[in-house]
Every structure is written in structure tokens, then in C-alpha cells.
Length: 386
Image (cartoon, rainbow, N blue to C red):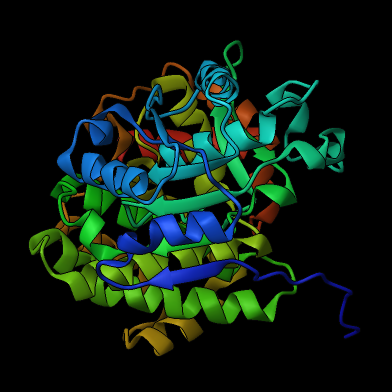
């Protein structure tokens, strides 16, 4: 075998540990940010911890303002309104705070500031990212409050198209946050259901990165250890929200998943994106429900890889044992068995399948499913036919 040429990137500075949010002001100053726009979602914006963080930034002499017009599945208008707030406030950088939606919108506000193209002109297709003027992109500091998307170490954001309802991945290398602060104390108040759903998002990233058919041994190693951290810590974090060790390990697992998936994602995401766009359902929850159906559908291509992963994770029974572990973990943290359990029906399967086969994540699946195969797989996910 002749090894392929590959570009491998792991550049984010990560500040990990309880209480490290107190360092935010000094990291802003080190990145040249004097007037940060603090971007988060409405729920977090109303919480005392956000007020305390904003107070700390102001005491440090920073001209911070809050922007929180962020939907759980972000849409273009969230980004456009954020850019207006950025310009009107004469801001020079972004603090993106929260779950995947807050982080993604914050990164896209920084990206779109002053650009003459639309956000959808910068979709992750070929070299479309070169359409943006990189000189206009301002520094970003990312602070996750959920252990799921890993957007704090990523060069992309996800936004739903207003007409097609497709989830579009928007990419530019310059929106990689300069600093990511991983403080487990910030995730303690996350409800059990969201802890479980976001945790399965992290697991999906690590699992699909591990199974992707491309050459990237660094990602394989990162993804394996990421899965182990989820295995050892997700249920603990769900059952005992104040367990800072479990919370911290899940934050790391989340960052590892997003670091690893530069190798590729797969059919879990290719299906969760259209279901999320069409039904406005939670991304991590969708991934958790869809995961075992895709795992089984990919079996003939990934069985040996999953056997190796099972051995590393201390799971007996090879592929079957690994699948049983996924199902048992879902049950333990109350992830439903089928999409019908969260109100999704079979009426839009044709749309889902057409969108799935075109989704950028589909290219990283070990098997290139056809529209017909995606429709059949999506139906199984809805009805619970495992």
C-alpha cells in the first residue's frame, strides 16, 4: 500500500479545568480582543453565571455586549442579526459561549463581519471558503457548556437554509477559535436529558471518525480514546450532574470527537442533519437514536474495526458486544429507541433520503448508500426496526 499525502491539523489552544472561566478576560486581551461580542442562547443569557462572567469582563476593562438571538437549530437570520450587533457595537472579537448553537453562531458572526458574500456561499464545498476575505475575520474564543458538538475546536458551523431546510456546513480555516476554555463547572446545570443527548453527539463524532474510510491515524487514536471517555463517564454525568471529573472527561471527549472527525463523519450525521432540518429536532438526540441502525447497516465494512475498538474499550463479544453496549448505554441514559418516540413520522422519508445522499457527511460513510438505501435506513430509524 502506498500511503496518501494528507494534511493533518490539531492547532487549538485548550485551557482545561474547573474554574478556568475566570481566565477569560486575560485570554481576550492576549488575542487582541478589547470589545468582545458575547454570543450565547436565550436560556443561558438569563442565567446568573452569564451575568457573573460579563461582570468579570467589564471589571477587567473590556467593552463587552451580549447577543443571544440564537435558535437551537441556528438559521441565517441569527447570523445576520449577530453581525448587525457586532458592527453597531464596534466589536473586535467574539466570545462564543454555550452549546453547539451558540458556538456556531458566534463563529459565523466573526466570519461574516464585513463580507460581501452570503453565509451559504461559504458552504463546505471544494474551495468555496476562499470566497471570504480572511482579513475581515476577527478572533474567536469558545467556551462550551455542553459536551457534544466540539465546535470549540472546529473550523466550521452549521446553519439551516431557510428555503430547503437543509443543514449547511459553513467552513473557513480562520474561524478556528484561538482559545477554547473547557471548564466542567459550567456544565453542571445542564439537565440530564441534554447531558445524555449531547453526550451521544460526542460519541457519534468519535465513532464515525473512527469508522471513516480515509487515512488519518492521528484521528483514529483520538477517536478511540474519545469513545473510552464517553463509555466511562457519560452515565456518571447524567446520574450525578455535580461530578466534575465525569463532566470534565465528557468535555474532553467532545473536543476529541470534533478534532477526530476531520477524518470524516458518516450516515449517522447524513441522516440526523435532514431530520433535524425538517423536524427541528435536537441534533445530539437524533444521533443517539440513529446510531445503532447505521452501525448495523455498515457492519460488513466496519466489523473488524469495531472488533478492535471493542477490545480497546474492554467490551466482550466483538461487533455484537459493541452494538449491545450502545443499546445498553442508550437505555441507561434514557435515549429513545426510535424517531417515532420523539414525534417524527414517515411522511418525509423521500426528502430525508434525497438530502442525506447529498449531505457532506455521507462521503465519509464506509458504504456509499444510494437514495433508496437511505430511505430504507431512515424508515428503520423512525419505526424502530433494528
